Image (cartoon, rainbow, N blue to C red; front, side):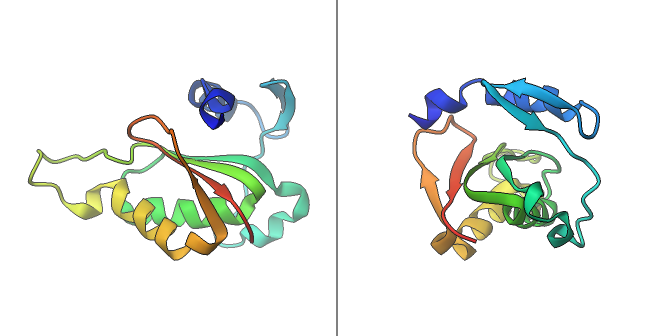
Length: 137
C-alpha cells in the first residue's frame, strides 16, 4: 500500500526542492508548499502551520549530520506523516573497511531505536531506503 502511494516520490520531492520559498505546486493530487529558512537551532519557531506530511532525509552521508537532520525533520513532521531515509546502506570505503561515521546507517538505526515509541516502521521500502510513519510527538 505505502509503496504504491509513495512510488516515484523521490524524483518528485527532489524537483520540489528546487522551487522557490512559498511556491505552491501540485504533487500526487494535493497542494504542497515548499518552505526554506527554518533554523536548525529553533525548529519549534516554525509553528503549527509548518507541519509536513513527508520528510525526505538525503543529504550528507556522515552519521552525525544524518542524525541531526533526522531529529529536526521529525519535529516538523505531523503525526501520521511519513519520513523517508535514503542511502541506508551507502558507504564510502571498500566493503569490510567501512568507517561507521561515514555511513548513514548508524544514525538512522540510532534515531529509530531512540524514537521507537513514537514511530512505526513501514515494510516494503526499496532496498537502501527506510520508511517510517510518525505515531506521536
